[in-house]
Image 1 (cartoon, helix red, strand yellow):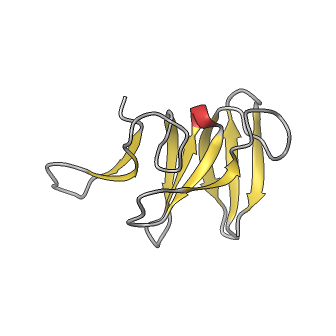
Image 2: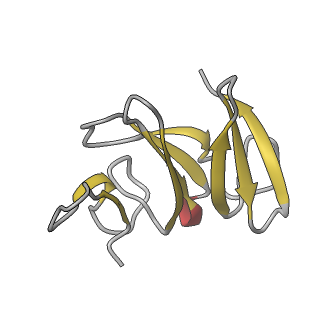
Length: 111
């Protein structure tokens, strides 16, 4: 796979890579099995990077992302994720992450 998140404008013949696209890996320019993505009003892309057990934030136009949740090796501690597959924000900006292997949803206060 391409391990990327693409943006497609209505009527476009090809998409634009907005996150990842540098092959599978765990550097800040890479994703490994991205499962879910959410885009905010500013165009920031948030990605559930499943095989890296982390949530990544990619500001609009950025060439690399930053880890905003997880990224501390897979596990079941409150600062760890294990197979994040979905994410959502509430109206207060709290991040909710659904984890496949931990069978839980965690809430994070993201600055």
